[in-house]
Length: 421
Ligand SMILES: Cc1cc2nc3c(=O)[nH]c(=O)nc-3n(C[C@H](O)[C@H](O)[C@H](O)COP(=O)(O)OP(=O)(O)OC[C@H]3O[C@@H](n4cnc5c(N)ncnc54)[C@H](O)[C@@H]3O)c2cc1C
Image 1 (cartoon, helix red, strand yellow):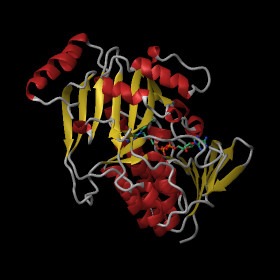
Image 2: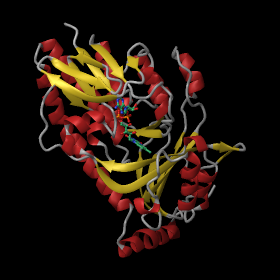
Image 3: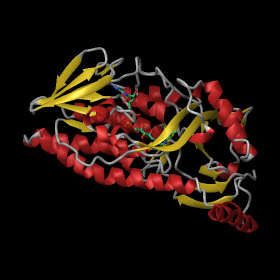
């Protein structure tokens, strides 16, 4: 196969996943990342990976890195739940996920720490990832595309891939009508060590649950536990990793979902202290177990994001520039599909490009076929996540009363309390 060069903008989860797959197939791949260094900023929250995300990783990563990823995910032995509750943790309804004691059924969703996953995916790419390179635009030509950077430099490759996340500079220049819509909601999120003074801060009945507590004034409180099946501290050396694991302790990841009017647009980058204060205030009406997560959280890891939802491009010119992940189909985190869809894109695009290389067919055709397939599943997920966000932040007072007061009361007659030890 003649060497096809691919320049990827963004060393996030989809960009790195694609890079591994193409490198293994003999492509010449370079990745350009805006951050000045691999761990220049906290990216620390856990991410639920489903069958699509796990399959994407399995198809792209070298086998030993995929095994390391599995070793550092949460255990799957017990049945898992996604519980929707009122602000006092009174259950409204729940979805159950079958447990898999063998841990081998890759359709079973599991939690991964995003920073650990990214560190695993950086392994073996040291000479390929170029830091401090902020892509600003790309120009396509008949034999490839030129990627331009904010420092005035540029590179030419057979194909450029925009995997530069929600505020993608490449999308803004190439698909100017596709600026994601603002959902008018913010999320403040953080992490809290699971064990404090030798005791778990999560009540036993909620150990294997993700919980979304619907609160007053369209506020929501989400949390889940990141339990490492094997501590990254032992797993990394066992798999011969060059790098030090970024995180070693189990933690609770929490997120407060707030309407924008309750979270005034910060001037500049909001500081962690300010975010934690806001989170404490917003958590006031929630169950003490939830409030404690915020009170005892790791200040350094408190962050905020605006919740955005992508607009489907009306006309999508086919060229030597392809997009993956949040750059083209960002979606609200309700539903946990953004990262999974991004990894699915990486595996699909890699397969289309590998087939084109083997068959000697034009890369544009591979990109067109990828775009067609990807836009069907990805925008379906965008719509589903938007619907779920609306449902979880109900404004109709009657629906609110039924969901948050009547149903939990009926359930409490038959159920054990969710916080009982
Ligand atoms: C609180 C929260 C919880 C979430 N939970 C889940 C979950 O449970 N499950 C799930 O599937 N998804 C989840 N998501 C969504 C998921 O994290 C994203 O969808 C996923 O990270 C997208 O991957 P990506 O590769 O497209 O972009 P990213 O992983 O964001 O990577 C983009 C990369 O591009 C770099 N970059 C940015 N601009 C430039 C530029 N101009 N030039 C070069 N590089 C640039 C960035 O620094 C970054 O490294 C969650 C999101 C949030 C905020």
